[in-house]
Length: 298
Image 1 (tube, rainbow, N blue to C red):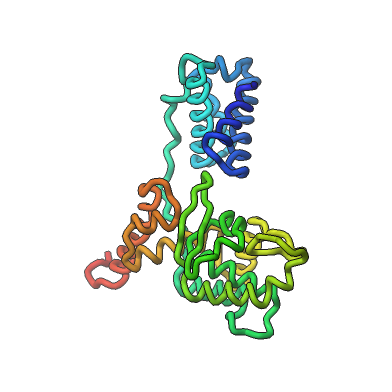
Image 2 (cartoon, one colour):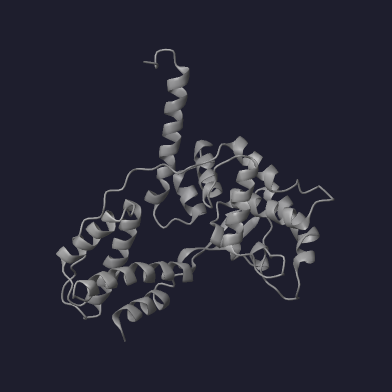
């Protein structure tokens, strides 16, 4: 089997990666293999200097450090696989330095901005004359903010994952499941959607998806992104697909939640990934102190 095909099969079978993650790996590694081919080499003969030149070329076309670091991670994983499978006797990528990443704090909305976004996307659950799509959209955003789930996770939800009152079962990265509590506002919005909107959208019986599009099929993550961005435009807020997830984590930590609890709720494998949200809180404290304390101004 061709090395790349074997590696992608390994990622599918052994690590259970999602289709989107596999597509990202393939894109990164296709780029790497094309570079090697242009330089009369291949993945079984490549060297550390060639991999470093590959990164230099990526930098020269203006690729961001975060994108370069992701591509290098893909290359490292590929070479580690080749070593373990005995296809190579060395790992030329293992000692290649990663690009230095700037420390960037997640972009979180304020609590007031979250309310504005929710109001813009759809009506309160007790609005009896609302359009079914707006009822659905309000339920989606309430759920995103209440659970901290990724957009792709919400798109993939089935009806039976709401089986326990007040809890949501989420299938995250690597097919790992986690239970997340959802608040009363999200529950009310979802109930309104299930009773008054979903039956109208369901074009065929037996569709297991929680959130449906106008044709009765599963709502895609791209459609959810568009719903979020449209709501942001309506209330003049700059939002991204991760805005509500970031806001969920930031508001929990600002409210005193333990970082390890937030790690569990977000489905992060490492607490180090979650700790960036503690930086948000520190930054907020610094801003408040600088603006409020009479001896803080310079």
